[in-house]
Image (tube, rainbow over all chains, first blue to last red; front, side, top):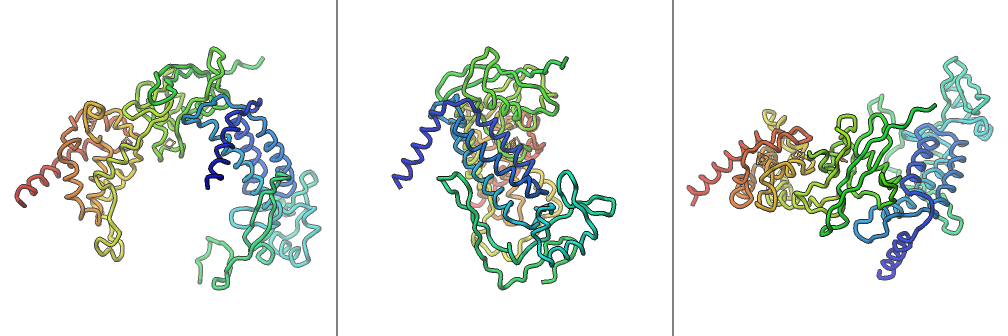
Length: 203
Length: 251
Ligand code: SF4
Ligand code: SF4
Ligand code: FES
């Protein structure tokens, strides 16, 4: 306990000494912009992969933060610097797990890219055909779009077989990277169903 | 040639700690449409440099919801107690003066300690007993005739604007102030809370209670939630007097 306390105190004291050119609040703003751009409701694997790289850069830049307030009384700046590092790591965890989850679930919808489509099995391909009819892949973005003239985006289906699991993310301190694994959870008593507010639930 | 960036000047009353002397600093923030005071303070965090080019510690203040529901960002803006998050720069005279609400202890800069209001809510029993004191069964419905009033008072976010504005809240008196007082009215209206009404009314008698209100109407003018504070203060005053009479005859 005492050791853990001391560790946190040391960490905070180190933050108070930070003397680089980066402003924590500016960096936070950029973090928000990046997440909004790549990891919003509709996302695709190219964007997510790019985001992983961008976040690595942001985490590096965290080391170069400088602070103006070195006091110990109600120092919101130092507290924020400490929180910001955790926010960046969380952002990495979110992005990495989204990248590995090739499905749409809840409010999150992943767009099927040409490169994703090649990896789908026949059943999955058939399901997409059934739902969207004929579709093509946009030349520029590689995104699946319907052929009916509307260019509606084609999204992955929910994939319970592979992804109805809890995502566990740990942080590999040495490589400063998130590591994703999955854990089964108890759902034997309730049959999984689609989240669909358009119909009344029956069970 | 690009148009020159319009700036907004902020004159901020700062203070390093509870016992330190206040001083002012001025900052310029880039104008943008829809800019509010919290957003401007955030810009200062990104670039904490005064108009004379001095790099300083960023201004300390508090905010959470950014939509006028949590109460945290209350400060004195151009002389009036209000929520910084919903104070639009376009609607304020410039330069914009910011100061902490000194009715409360100042922790640092614009950051204040509003816990006295929480203590007052404890005094007036600002909650409903549902811990087995009596049987609840299915939740009783709100009285439809008073539901609108209860809804209105329940909007109180303990921001403290009304305490800052009230001439009778301060070191010269023990008055707990309009917000916690009026909360007693809310919980007395509640179908379960009303059983404790005598406790609440008794808590409003005597020192710091409702008689400290001078009916100057400042509170109702500043409440960001438009709670008709003086109306309920008057009704509570009547209820407290009735309770006082009951107390006499029950002895
Ligand atoms: S009406 Fe009463 S509570 Fe309201 S500001 Fe005046 S003295 Fe204070
Ligand atoms: S009554 Fe109004 S001004 Fe007073 S604390 Fe509640 S919301 Fe704020
Ligand atoms: S931040 Fe919640 S009321 Fe202003």
